[in-house]
Image (spheres, helix red, strand yellow):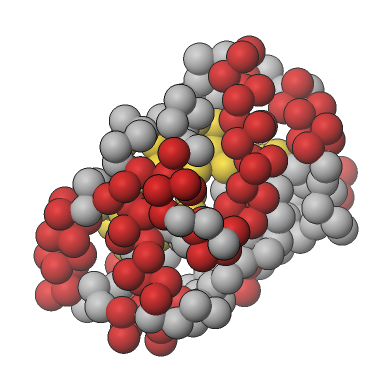
Length: 212
C-alpha cells in the first residue's frame, strides 16, 4: 500500500482514508491516486493508489520515512486520501521524528477540524503543532458556512466552517505560516475577495488552487 508518494519536489505521507468531509471536488472521487508512489511503477503505472488496505502503524510510517532520501525534497507534507488529523497524535510523533533527522520544512494539509474530530479544544489541538510544523494549510473553500455545507458536506455541518477559522487563528500563534486554500471552482470569483479577507483576519493568507 502507498504510505508515501511524490508530488513535484515534495514528499507526501498518506496516513488514513478517514475524512469528516465529502467534498464535491475531491480528487479521490475521480481517481485512485496522484503523483508518483514507491509502488507506482509496479502496480499503477505513473500513479499509486492512495486507497489504503488498512491504516499503517506509526512504526510502519517511520520505517517508510527512513526509506526515503529526504535531501531530494523541498518539503514534507502530511496529505493523502483522508484527513490526517484523524491520526493526530501519530501525525505529531511522525513529524517529531522527521525533525530529528532533517531540517526539511513540514506542512500539513487539513480541513482544520482537528478539535472536533478528536474531542479536544481548539487551543489543545493548536498547541500540538508548535515546533513540529512549519506550515499549516487549511481548506477554507467557501466564504460562508452555508456554502461550505453544500460544497464540503462535513459531518459537523456549519460548525466545521466556524471551527476551521477559529483553529487557523489560534494555530497561527504556534506555527510560522498559515495558509487558507480555496479551489477556484468552488466559489464564485466575486467571493474570492471575501475568502481573502477571512484568511487575513484569521492569521493566514489565501491560496487559490486550480481543480486537479
